[in-house]
Image 1 (tube, rainbow, N blue to C red):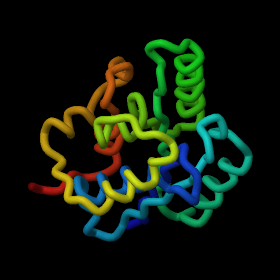
Image 2: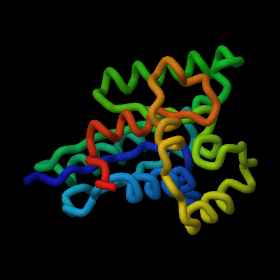
Image 3: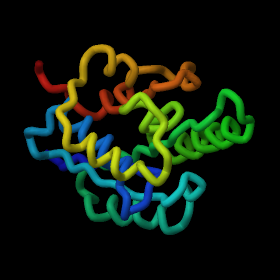
Amino acid sequence: MANKQIIFVVETNEKKKTDDIYINKFIRSYYDLSNNDITIKFVHMCGKTNYKNKTVVTKINKLINQNSKGENIVIYCFDTDRIDKEIDDLKFLKEVEEYCKNNLYDLIWFCYEIENVFLGKTISDENKVVEAVKYQRKEVSYDDKLIKSLSIDKNEKKTNNKSNMVLVLNKHLKKKVR
């Protein structure tokens, strides 16, 4: 059976890797990766406006080429920021949705930020790494309430502490039997 590679394209940079921590921890806790046929990789945009930057696209294509005989899934991950109040944020997210659609990529969004979804609060830029590392180390229970907040459809992306993460990942991964 061919190897499945899931490439997450995230806003953070390669040094901080804060988005990687939240996404990786959730996947490894909630989904069954025991058959060792699934590889999780991250491409770092170093800022959301770099989503179609040549360097980012080159990194994605390099990973796909390394797994040329397997299945490759590209998932862009974005914070929605203040799409409920800022027209530029909404316009940007629509542009990203179109880009993902045109390239056959999936899109995961976090309202308003990934920290809002997993921690329930906004974290200042200077504290994001510290908070992500604390989250990585602590025992987290992915209860029904959290799973529901991660299973919101695209029409509800203006609701704080919500994401469509589970809806996207359920297409590609099997949940652990609990």
